[in-house]
Image 1 (cartoon, rainbow, N blue to C red):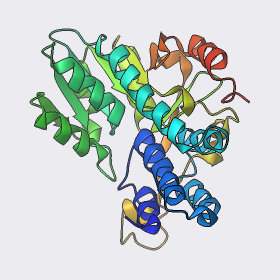
Image 2: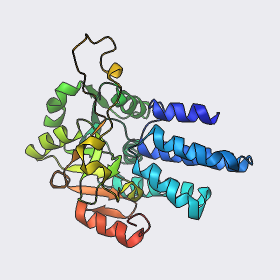
Image 3: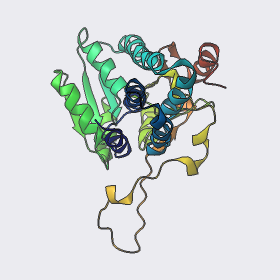
Image 4: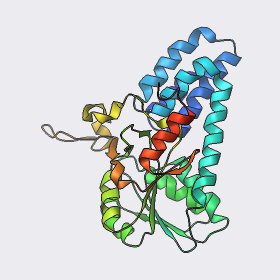
Length: 278
């Protein structure tokens, strides 16, 4: 696949999920290096940043690859995901109903791993306007995992029966909050009111040391056409991609470093990856 096509797929969310975006982005740069096209790397490095301006895992991977090289960075991304799957699958219990929103390749991998030993079902919301929840439902159903697919406005129905909520995270903040797909905070608040624990699955390199998302204006606003292609004049369409799930709504952060509360997770990253909290 040509570099321009990779960039387009990332920008248009055909390649989705922070882990998949970072992995494919670093793979692209490694391919250019292997082909002796070093002179093009810096341009494509910047295009990757511009294609998804709100992905700390991608940004951290790009920065760290300058010192460590592309191979070791890819190894970290892949090994970290395996460790998260190992740490997270043990949280699933027989008979559970797991609620999830949007699509996280890490969360689906955790559920696939757990299903080999546990019987449970999943409730997934559609995640308008791009319907990433359909990807989750389809992937899990192919593995034989029972899935009920809910419209977004029916999330309360999904949570009424849930034992725990599993979501990914595109970024984690030094304040202990997580950034995930729009709707995540709304549903996390509903989960808290119902006593449903919220578990966030995240690679430690998704920590955003600059707190880019602490300011509302840094939340990515997607094209209005994704929501309403022919909206009448005078109608402003709001289409933010993400929102902040506050630390007090998060019961556990599951990373390659273990299972921690939000603040302890920040300490663990500081101890293990000082270059991320530079």
